[in-house]
Length: 530
Image (cartoon, rainbow, N blue to C red; front, side, top):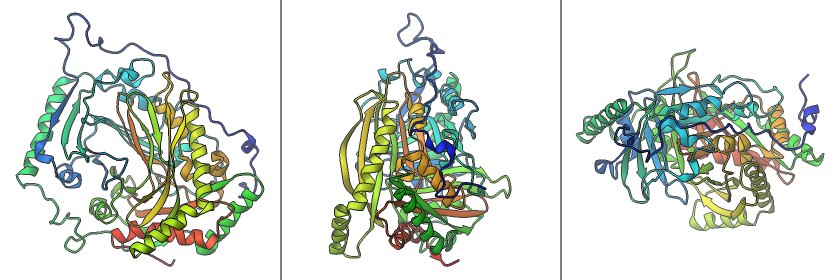
């Protein structure tokens, strides 16, 4: 019999700690370093960066139409202004795709090797000059090609020993990282657009062909030869036909949810945890094209971290699969100097129907001892995670309990920062901090064990991360919440919230309804009784 929610498995008594994979020894770069006598003139150009004046002011989602026929379309878009999320990226047609973690102690070993194919990859390995930076000019994009993809929540099972209770029914990869040798980037601050192309395996001829191919497609877009908004792929819900499902059913009943909240509260009373994030899944049959649905989601529920990832056809049905995200929450960010930042979101209220009601709900949230405690506890989990790979004493909390708003809800957000150790890289940071504390609980491992026993199905991509990672060690990522998953048979949407001792079960249910309302209404759907 699997352990119940109140039963502590024997391995749950271990301290909250996780073995970070060992740092590999530095290896020599595959090409001579810049400045070597007599070599610079002969060395192929490793990258190109072009300004795309014609794309200034063009919505990334419209530019993406020119690449719809290519496999592996990825659009990571900051669809609304905010303190974070300055850059939007578009790419497609990856050079290679990794769809499983590596065997052995380091699940990211193959991902690190794949990234090493870009520009020789020396900068992606600890101890080979990553901290020296890349010479990137101010105002140019931090991501110019590298890995783009996602880690599923259940990738955490490769990092921790967890019970197997919940049912697996989506059969999507634990990890999918595609190696892209080009990206179009938009700067939300200036409106400027750029095309960045990198050589892979030192192949400068391929680099030149890629530049030409992308520019040809963009020329067709500029000439109006590519269908954009206003046609049958438009984001305008009043004129554009769509195959989006209209009715979603919860896989967890109200009674089961209330019982689950009480089980979490019981575990808190026994001293096992301080809080846990409990979720339920909504679903509807779906085998159509996910892209028109994403267009409606992106327009109707604009988010700081909107994203679309084409996952290719389902092996079972042949229908397209994709992730469609309108996430408000960043996960981990790393710059070329090794500075780390994360912004956990905890504490939620709906938006008001009037300005005064909106302000009153915000005041209520800011004054809520339950929500404030929930946020601070998760910030402490992130401080612990970062502290395991950051320079001792460098982890700070520069912003605590800040109010941020989306179209449907308002949140409390805290910022935690640190400085990566010189012998660590972004993969070690992911191994130390994944999955995020804001969507697991505190202590994290025991909370994950309880979640596994209470939620009927595995989370899959939900509560994982969508990310990009460059060969210079830069990383950008978001938490996959407010995210539709098209798996080739159905479309799913998870909603959840943090449960503490002060939680009222029915209020927590109502909060999940409020969280679902934004993404569902944006695609013209509603939640209906089972």
